Image (cartoon, rainbow, N blue to C red; front, side):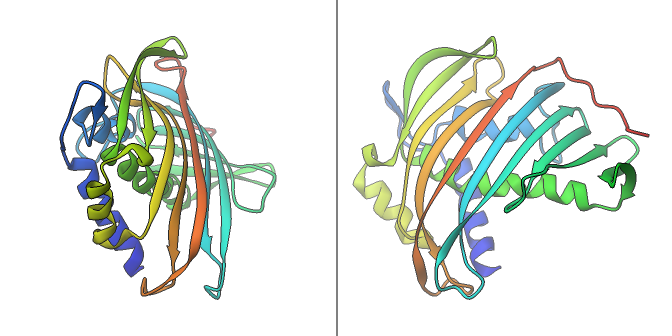
Length: 245
């Protein structure tokens, strides 16, 4: 928990940081730092999109139960989001069959499909939906903060997007040393991100990374681990979600 809170705090600082910029390279630029929040919305502001479809695969390195080795946990999420209403299909680590659920925000009700029947839940679906962004924030915030090279305009599902190359190997070594001094351990990341030209929201992300995995109290590194994030937003403004009841 200590390690988690520390990483979350640093990620928040990274996402709000603004660094040096040039025509080719953006370091911690505003158009990247807030892109995930613009997509998902916050407690103060809704998503910039009325509705959208999300496909997400997280392959995250974790310490095993006795902190002697690194294992990977894979989560796949397919979701329709329309305002506060969300329809989720999620495959958890070690599973092959998706679990299905609804969050109906206007009524503050949740439903999960159990043995072919919809059962009302109390927070379980919303908690799962709230947790996955935390696995994206740290790798995304770190990588975009140290190096994001603008590639030009491309299309994602018919929407114009500004594409950026992500590569920590191209970052200023002094910047990387400063990041490591925060207590994050060693981190490398390469990939590409697409930012909606109209709204600034994140539309697509492909990121491979390596990071040090720590023990329970963050006092020692268990081993380096490799992870990946694949995320894409489609059907903007074309999705509806209604209660299964």
